Image (cartoon, rainbow, N blue to C red; front, side, top):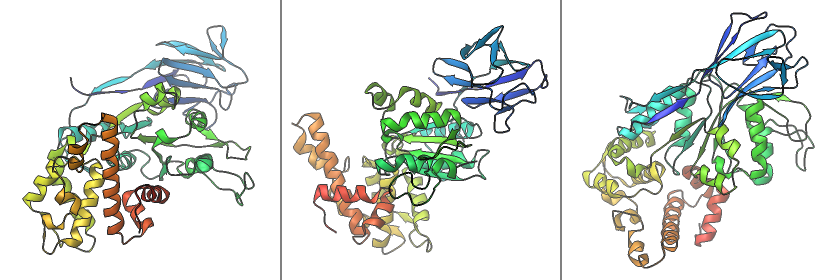
Length: 437
């Protein structure tokens, strides 16, 4: 069956009042109505409050919600606090009668004819479908959840989405929910005021304020502590926040793109992730395939990574066929990030313009081609699956760290930046595996 995505759209029209005849095309999952210029629907009616009501999309339908307006929100003669909207339902805010009409689109995704989108490259069907989805979704205001294994390029996809959006001139801010100390995540997200906690010697904006007018990429959203999830949900719905220790409400205009390598629906079922936050984030879900499922992209990826890694010139131009064959047989547990590390490490060990097998890490040349831990597979086949898997992961982790630390001369900070990991995480794994600098 062809891949499809559901683009949630709608239209609000004013049929009486000062704005009679006006209409608003809506592609956001939360739409605010009022006289304040920060609203998505700004009315001229003097009997309408600054922030009067909002239309919110939920997994169960579209809700009209009064937001403590002075004159109330009515459906017929009934003043409502919250009500589900059906197609063509009329409602009144102040002296203005309005109607909401859903205009959702189900789009059949046809693969793009491109083999490159910003810094993403690939000729495979899977990647060309990814390009097509990004191109369709980027111009909207919809919140996007990017899923995929570690190293598949989730941040690159989010950057492409930002650069193809109406917010491209605004900031692009990255926040890794798994890297910040748990005690500081709330402050990092929403900012804090001076004296809010020990060490808060000055007021500071959080990443939501820093991303105002642009895009905020929330990486590893599945690592967000459960007690902070309702606070994030509130900011996503209300488009405003209070800094830690503050009382002032600050409006934020941010498009959120989140990413995770976890199965968030499984996390929801396990009680570790809020269902309402999941549905607020996954208005559109974009899955990035693992490298092993798009092996045909390897030659193009290697060429791209070679050119990107050589800032001092194109001394190394290609890799020999034997290297490509080995790459195509590898399982790539670290995906494109692992491939990039292997290619970059090989360049200094390459004497001529062609990367040979001798330039590859020892673990690559000595391992079985179907898997970096293939020799371990032979010794764990009689183990329970879970135990064997853990042993293989540990073997991969240790060899990856040994090569990484060696490549960066024992400098843990440089190694952490190259691996796109937090320094503390690298140090913790080194202690776990008994690796010394």
